Image 1 (cartoon, rainbow, N blue to C red):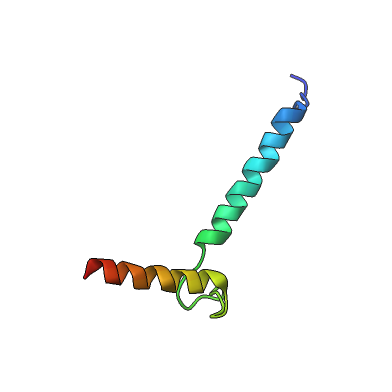
Image 2: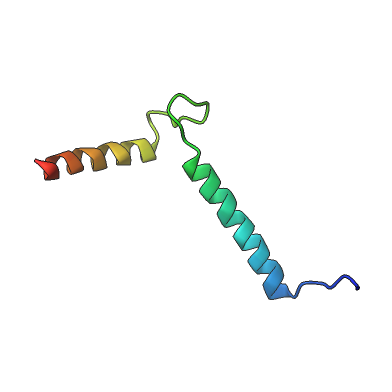
Length: 60
């Protein structure tokens, strides 16, 4: 059985899928006390703080 080349669309889909997996791994690999902890000045940390504050006010 010979090696078949992927068509352009399939090659693109393969690359896009690989990049999406890498993006998700990077976004979900944040653990408390780990080396990948976000700095306090990060926009994500600020957004999470605001969301937590809104969530507590809605629960009251």
